[in-house]
Length: 546
Image (cartoon, rainbow, N blue to C red; front, top):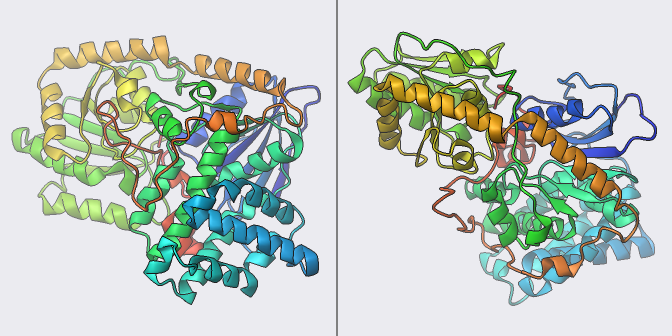
């Protein structure tokens, strides 16, 4: 655990940001959002508890003086110090862990999850949980639980190797519980999942109100990732059961949930969140920092900005461009953004696809651009091809620059664009190409759409609106602080929708929201890739506009 100390501002409302794989150790859309909040509120005091990869990640943001402390919590670094408990304490922890696992695997026992989690949090605070989970006793407890008659997981014939794997994954996932939680102010989790754990501990121990902002839906991202993870079903059942019940507990206990779009709200309500505890707050940009982009390029050009990552689905974009070029042989596709560490193979695959389709000369990977506005100005039309987004900064930035856009109908994209751009289904090169050709062939329509897009940003999605809204929320929640004051309790769970118990994503899509579901995987630490290869689990970095 690494701690960075700054100056503590006395008398100010204190906010502890809870992050995972993002601010202040990497660039990306969510990091930009965190930086905007922090720098926009110099009148408040901030701390950060950041779940990282190895703990060796440098700070990549210049922190203002009112950020007093940054604690790095490595998920995949050296094992935490401490000793496994013995005697009565050891038996109590083993009993709590048995109750915890039973809740993950037996639908009839889910009510015991919270009590077991907080018992384990107390053990983690004493340095006992991680050593316990790295010992043979924990593996034995799991083996006994999932071999009970009547449990579905038993039918998959779990092996000792499955038990070792699942226990190791839980040990890593629960490491944030060992971090001293905030004891005052507001805990603001900027995603669901493991980043929330110190916030739940702070609420349970000190009555610190918990605020949750999901830019995407963490649970659904886990479901997606574990479809192809290299684990047998018993391991997936344990890990996904943990994330599912953690999501339910987070929704139940949060004083307020502030999704970045209405689509996420649907997931949160289905997950059992009280609708009255949900308040949508859109991401915002400074229109002055993203002025009209100016003249279009003479050559018909499609531009794209982001991280080179499978979640951005550049392969569909390249296939769509091949169709565009069949009609416009002079067309170009310019791709702006960094390739995250570990993503080199995906970029090579995209380059090979462009060559295979005969368009390597017209598809250029420009790398990171010093001024992201140049990426938007480079195209007649700005493209977004993602299979997954929350409320993407690249889109509203391009809109602020007055460029017409073609975007995939995922997450909050349709909410952002309105009628100022064209929206197409994800993973559909033909529809994407048709939309791009439609705009490339009509300069007047591009101009009017671009003007309307900038006006929409000014009216609805300004940074000032976002910052002012969160300042009010922080002060409102800080006034609730104190043991017992903000525990929403079972009443907030009265909808009781629950979450799917399977290893495939629950199908809660609506026609409005298409197939999108979560913010970029690259902003995460917890991924199947990192679980399989701990040495490569550092925070990925890429385009700041990702």
